[in-house]
Length: 105
Image (cartoon, rainbow, N blue to C red):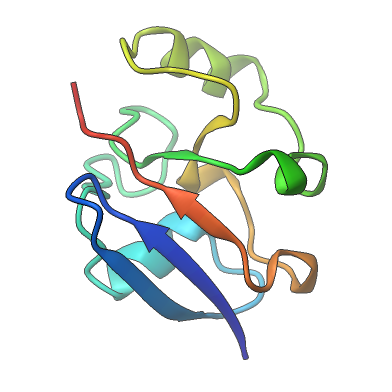
């Protein structure tokens, strides 16, 4: 099994088992990761599953599509690496990745 680490807005680390082909949002919700609200349950409609992908993993997660990017544009805390965790599938190449969960604003 692969692992992911989420750093919550309060800087708490959540090291979790990450099932391949599940979204990073599903993994976070299953593990009660602080800061991942997932209000739209993964339909790319709310941006409450915002995470920051570290630079060394961005090529592996790909870029946000037009719909995801439009939602991220509404956030005051969007920055390089901002993605919606509902739009990223876990794969072996992401094993060991640490993502930041920024505060909801």
